Image (cartoon, rainbow, N blue to C red; front, top):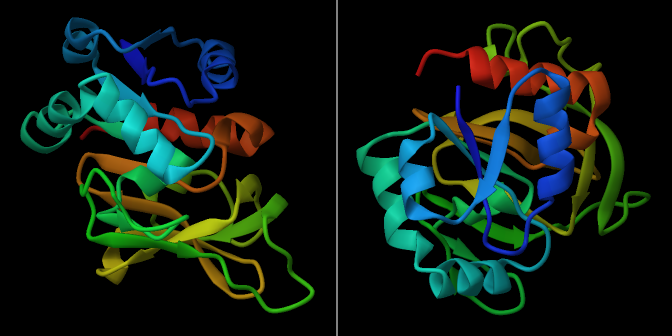
Amino acid sequence: MTIAIIDYGMGNVRSLMNAFEYIGEDAVVTADFDELEAADRLVLPGVGAFGDAMKAIDAKGLKPVLDRLALEVKKPVLGVCLGMQLFARVSHEHGTHQGLGWLDAEIQPLEVAPPAKVPHVGWNAVSFAPDEWLFKGLPSGESDYYFVHSFHMVCADPADRVGTTDHGGTVTAAVRRGNLVATQFHPEKSQDNGLQLLQNWLAHDF
């Protein structure tokens, strides 16, 4: 299986590559259109601000390519952290910015009840349905994953949200629609639980 980690200049690509290598899979970091076309699966990473990320994607001419692969070819795509947020239609982080628009969702400031704090940094348990394949082999509400974020995704269709965490209120932790899968947490930094999730994603027949 060929895994392409999309390189637009704002991703945690080294830790993702290490995670895939650890579970016995090779991944290439690339913005080359032909390599993205040839890959079996795509990973959209992201660290930083939403608006800057979309500018970087546009500057490399990646948006029409990614739109076609995700929405027409329906190549499996995994979004991670900011990469998940980029799936949304719009973000309200430091102004209003248009996203990729793959999901009918908005990115809004994380507003939490004390003693929870923003940014949300650290380990949190994620809850999900017992039959959710993305978390196969992992106990709901007991397995911890590593989060770093100040904004969160609000889905227009609740069915898109397949994992939640409690951080001064309910926060979207994972989304899934067809070939599009994403997590607000960093699976590549979530030790055994995150590695299991990556393996589940790779094993799933889309």
